[in-house]
Length: 259
Image (tube, rainbow, N blue to C red; front, side):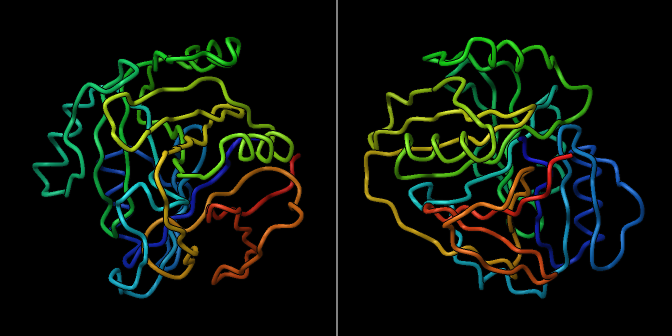
């Protein structure tokens, strides 16, 4: 089952609502409170939750050799125009717009509390297509009228083990891969798709570090998947009491029952 919701912790909910509604055109669902806001990202929701200030308390770093969560990706049109608006507002970029492997245009930038976001324009041209029907369904989504949630990216240790786990428990399967032949770290990307959402899987032929998820600091907290509670995974509890599971690579997620 697809990703239903992505929880992002923020130190000022109203500031983050203004950011996501202005720059990513994610409309508010219902009313925002000082503690929480829910935004419509077309294929999933983005949930903003209030935490105490203290970004420097986070152990998350931008080095993709740190396993677990790496970024949240949105499919867009007019990428350069959107990037220009972000830059004019003083938003910090990790990577300026460029043409990337797979014949897409991308850029990376930070939200007000340091969560790393990506915009992607165009249909990926995979180095290897592993599921032609899945790729066809992806391309049938077309050019988004406004930014659409596409994926959460994670760095992992073992692609086969990750595929087996998320396939058997949540119905994700690899539809294709992209190689990064110029990266000396031996970088490869796989795309685990379920419904209209993706877990973008980074693998490297280098040693990687492990980070224990932090559910009470600013930035990405966890994703919500549709399905049954998993077995044999570490459990922790979010500040609001939600049970959150941590996979072997440190990626945190909750589950909600399928309808």
